[in-house]
Length: 499
Image: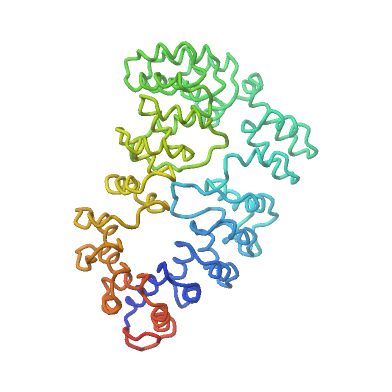
């Protein structure tokens, strides 16, 4: 057995969907090398395997498990207080794959991270560095500050105070009168964001990075607004929810088309929206036509997620802190403007009846967004988008509704990625084991329709060995026999199997 064949067998078994827990646990042995790490990070795992990995003495195994996107994150809670700070940091940092569906960590794990007094027993990272990983991972739900504003632990109330504008008026009032002095001070500073005179007094030099943040988010005095216009620094004003009405009217007539685009859909635009519907720029006119349908900032945010992006947008899909009403989405689904139908198609709560209608929409981007966002999108639509839009393929393959059969008509497709998908279809009469593409041959070798004698031949061929080892029809005793050879240095022939 060559080293190359050994690695292919190990990797194939690691991702064999039919491999039971006792097989997979053997891959936690250090002798399995990278295959065990790839398994811990890259696939769903039986409970017994998760338990074994959680308490595994080898840190690399626990680090790999911490990045697993497929395991229920609640099962990973022990890793938030792992003796190794690197294991904690891996869990806080999330998966390396950057999936489109951003899965938030459970509140108890977030609380553990945010209240930790150290970075682990090994001292290789600090608790602040771990929290930094957490903030950059997008695993903190946008609703979390509100949820923590009344928490018993002052560190969590302090975190909420730093997210001042996401809080309710009652929560702000309570934090200003908090029993903890650090929380009170953070709340006091947060409250100044909504005080135009305080913002003016503390405004950094216009043009600096911090000034852009302030001008984009805080309440602004008339004097600050005038300074922005004088310095031609009005981009932040177009984005700021607190920009005064008279300034918005001026922005709607700004010579820069991008500025007019930014304000055209604002729910507080007022009479200037009617003017923009006759703007010389077609995109501005389209956005202005949407504006009467946008009454709240939640609705504005949902439209913004769509209006600036094209059919190959792969931006992360996150759960907003608050969202528009179901009735608004249903109304959007019936609009003549395709952008609003795209917004409706992006909401996973849309009714089955409306999903059926939008799945047949004339606008391709409506269909694409429905396929990528809605759990009831029909399987045939998911397959169509997979074939026509390669940018969405990694995401579509993660969806439970993605069809596992009905793909045989694609076996001669010119794109090898599409042929590989077809090659895995268990209804395919003859998997294309001789395809010139490696990925197609690997998928064909993993097709469960292959008879045992064919699998044995494929296991000895470097071009197909990994796929054959991943084949769910491979008998479990044969999996163990292959592991015996790989992990124990057995010298039995590759065709030998446990009986």
